[in-house]
Length: 398
Image 1 (cartoon, rainbow, N blue to C red):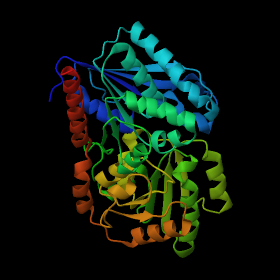
Image 2: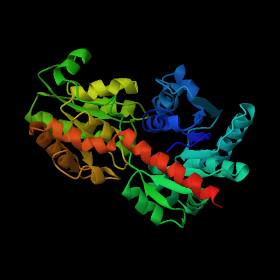
Image 3: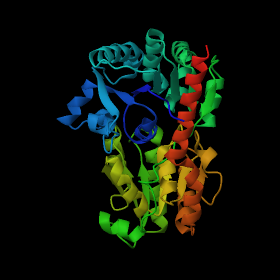
C-alpha cells in the first residue's frame, strides 16, 4: 500500500545492515525518507589512533550509503559523548537537541517517525512526536529492551515513557515481547523479526568463494561475525576451538568484527597456542560478508544474549547451518536440526560438541535456503509498510 505524498523520518543509531536494509526497502512507499544517524564525535579519535573500543562507533562502521535510494537522505546527528555507561542516561537530551537543530536547519518535513532502539533514538522520537504531532513507531531491538529497562527504576521509567509515547511498538523476537510485558506499557506490540537481503546473501560455490578469499580448500572453515564485546561470547568460541583442535587439525575459525576485546581475545588465542586455528580478521564491509559466509562450512554465534541476530538470517540465506546459543530470538528461528544446532550460553563443552557435530554432518543447503525465504527483508518490509499504513489510517480517523 502506497503512503501517498508522505515523508518518513527515521531516527537511528546507524544506517547499515539490519537498520539500512528495511529502511531502503520501504523508501519507495514515500516521497522522501530522512535518516538521522546518531554519531559520537569522540569516536573520531579512532580515525587517528587505533582504539578498538571505539571502532564500532566510527562513521565508516555506522553509515553505509552503498546503493542508497535516490529519495533517501542520511544526516549525522553529531555530538560529543564519553563512551561510559554513566553518561548514557544523559544521551537522550543531547541526541534530541542536535536532532531538532538539524531538522530546522535542513527544513525537514515529515509525516511519520520510526525510531530504531528505545534509547536514545526512541526518546528523540517521543519528543519529536510531542512537538510536531505526527505518529511514532519504535522498534525495540535487543539490549535496549531486554537489559536497559531492568537496570534500575530510573531506566525503567525512561523506557516506559518512550514505549507509551509510541503509536505502535515493533520488536524483533517473542523473547523481547516477554520483556515488554514486564513493563507498564499499553501501546500495542507487533513482533517483526530481522531478515536478510536475498539479492546479497544467497548460495555461491564454496570453493569459488574460498579461491576469491585465498582460503584453504582442504580445511573445515568456521565463521563468526559480530562486534568484539563480552555479550558476543567470542572467548567461549576460542575455548571451544582449543578442545576441537585436540581431536582434529583440519579446522580454522575466522572471527570478523571490531571492538574493545580485540587485544584480550588476541592474547587468549596466543596463550592457548591457537594462532594457526583462530584468526581475528577485524572489520569487513557488509558487502564482503556474503563471500565469507559462502566460504565457510558452518556459522557460529556464541552470544550470551541477543535480540534476533541479523547474521543468523544471512547465513541461512546462504544455505549455511547456524550454531548458536539459546538466547533471545535464536531458538524461535532455529527450530529444527535441519537448519542448525542450539547451545547453552557460556558452556564451552556444549559449544565444542555442537561444533564438532555440525562439522561432521551432511547438511542440505537447499532445505536451509528454502526455510530462510520467509525471512527475506522484502517480506519483512512489506509488514513494516502495512504497520505504517495502519497507524496513519488510525490517526486520520481521530
